[in-house]
Length: 174
Image 1 (cartoon, helix red, strand yellow):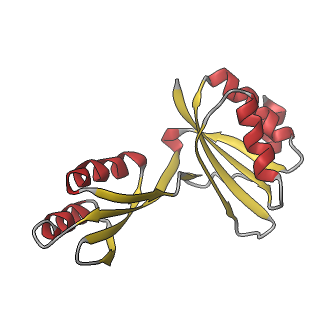
Image 2: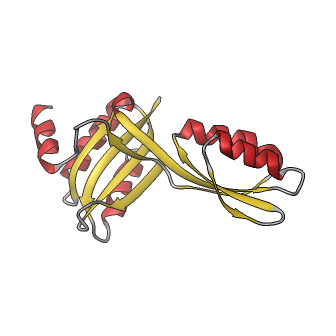
Image 3: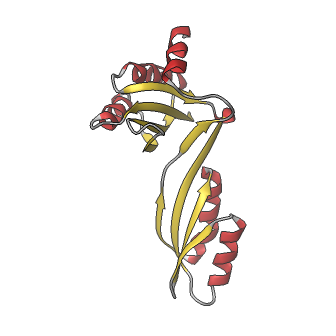
């Protein structure tokens, strides 16, 4: 089974998230990551949904999503043709002895230090999942006190744009 990224433009109103996530759970898919945010149009939100599962089953779900009233457009994004990013905040122990090493690790990963106390450092990092997991692996020996991750956001590369017109054409050809 592989991870799939589904991008959907939806009406920005109450209940939409519940209907979309319910469709996945009724079909036996566990959502690995779900990110929702307003687009350039305040009446429209973009959902980026990461799920692991069967290709054929997911294809059916994408078609069913497209039929929901609140869904404007939906498409599975191919890993080779999209940008994926995630933001992570991680608070780690860092005393006088370990602080230089923690700062060096943050620098290697181009992460930003956003808070420092006498016993902790909080780091903000942006990147793909592998990069963030690599940063966590190196920080673990120092003691991770808190961790928050946004989940994936993704857009297609180049001039490809998810829109109601593009989605309607895709459903007519399949």
